[in-house]
Length: 581
Image 1 (cartoon, rainbow, N blue to C red):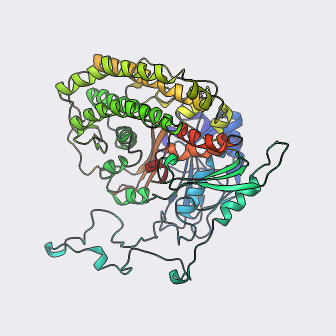
Image 2: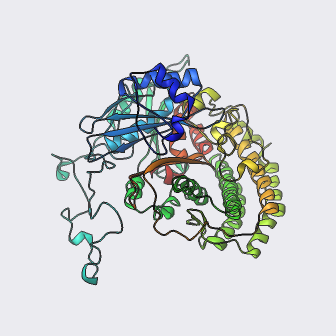
Image 3: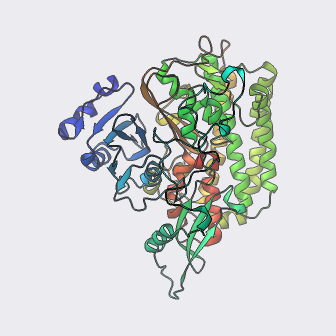
């Protein structure tokens, strides 16, 4: 229990309701309650029904090795806005088991599968508990502290054994594994013939429903991807069809998984900054933003005012670049064959010019630092931003709007397709344009303000039909609101320093934990960090919106035609870098 929790009336109300379930534990930065595993469902149901914490944002695990203890932590929010309330459950390392929350919060499904995959924590009564990022025959659970990968050298960076006596030594020459591969026990690669995804196919067929067509046809399982031009990366949809109608669907991910979080726990805190660029690689400035504010909470530092304005400027330019790309490639998925995409790419290039001028890189910007940004924006670059915001971008967005919004093909292919209701979107933990297109005005910049957003005048855009067309319209709306924010930033930005104090190359993060989040172009991008006072994070977790938004993909696609699956996926707007991590 942290000081904030001790002063929070909800903690004592919950402790009074469940006197035998709540465990008192002092934790710096923890805003919630530690709950006994057997009472988790009852406590979570009370949070949802009695206190309106209807939105489960993030779920992850923590390994307390060498103690015989693991943790599962849940971050709950209200869809009407406000601060979080956390629940934490302890379990043993030998046979870790926790009740599944999928019955109360369907948005936990993929996240609980990820925890099982990477930590080995079993969730009882989970509808489909299989590996999700690693392959089925993978041996072990990589985020456990006692798991060592091929070419393992040391637990944390900087590695001490790289330059003994001033000479480089390559790990592959000293490593006991020799080759960069590990095989499961009793596995002979010479005799392996390959195996179908029988567990996934079995769960698909069992949960698939017959359509209401009078003429019945045999159901057919079709794989779209992982190599398919419409999947926007190495991504696979396993679809059950009855005729051309989608009866069920499973997203299959992990083909580009590189264990970003394991790397993050080996790096120092500052070394993780460029790694965040590689998550949603179209939105590196937003990724830097989310990670920075999380660590700044733990360090207790506040960036200078000019740095805050520059951060918001970069985040909103990123939102515009991302949304315009999303619109252009959605039209590609409809068959426009690159004309709208090229219009979008032209505007994005001008924004990337700005990023290159301030950060030295167009995509992997590595521009933010704890307490500010790495360097100021030159005056001539500020003039280019002003020209973009006040002249070029408004004209070009109006042009795209004029070409696309009332286009007969766009409306026919998008209206009423991929519908999800507001209740379903909240239950599936959807965020960003997917959630707001259902009529829920949930934008973290307003619901849980950070940086200077509370002082800026802008509207939270919503649409009400929850279909592909409304998601397109909402991104158009948000581009205009981002331009509105940028005009205010350009008019108000003060003079002054761009970083607080002396730049810290080795941040001394005190023991504790923090969950920070920003409203990225694809929704809530969150970082959960646990520090034990050492130079490297004890736990580094990314709440990736692209990954969690896939939880509702099957619901959006059921009843649609197979050709519409491509359009629906395009409107979800995933980036595989943050899906697979």
